[in-house]
Length: 236
Image (cartoon, rainbow, N blue to C red):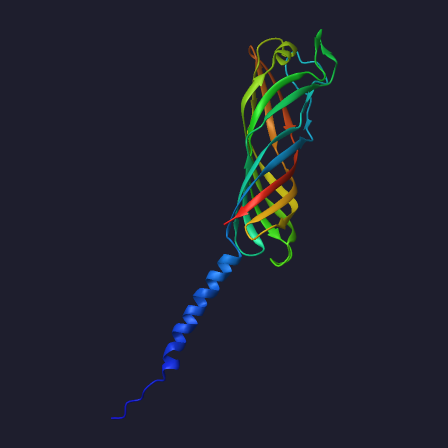
């Protein structure tokens, strides 16, 4: 019987290919970390639109507006590849102040421009982001689309709000689910660190209901939040 001997180089070739494959995968992972944490600042303005408040003993033209807020921005991004990522964005819930809008007084009580209520907002968004250009560019614009969830809590009528309503008042706002979007750009400072700026918007609609000793007043509010974000990201 003739025994054929396979050359050593051919026997080692599959192992070399396998090792090269693992090395390439490791280098790709090293070059493009899959996870990113972001910390920064939210500068939020509300383009509030609401129907005039309706209910018993309610003068015509009673409306509200919401003041701007600034809060901490926090986000986690899972990079799917060099261009696509899934972002969970939120922040420390701010206390937003609501001001009367309409007549100067309700009866003899000052109303227009008075702080009538406060509320905190828990308002995370989940976005599918797309970065333009490839990873060799330090500056990369991006866009994102997704959904926003908003829950209101710690709603309080102020003394000015109680006076305008005619007594101690309980306030309620329904939860909201709506579309959200963002556009921005990131600058890759090092492999792990980048800085970014973006402009985001969301549709937040809620049903308002107040109860003043059994007198119910209602309206629908479209908050239309707009947020400018400045942040730093760490990839790992």
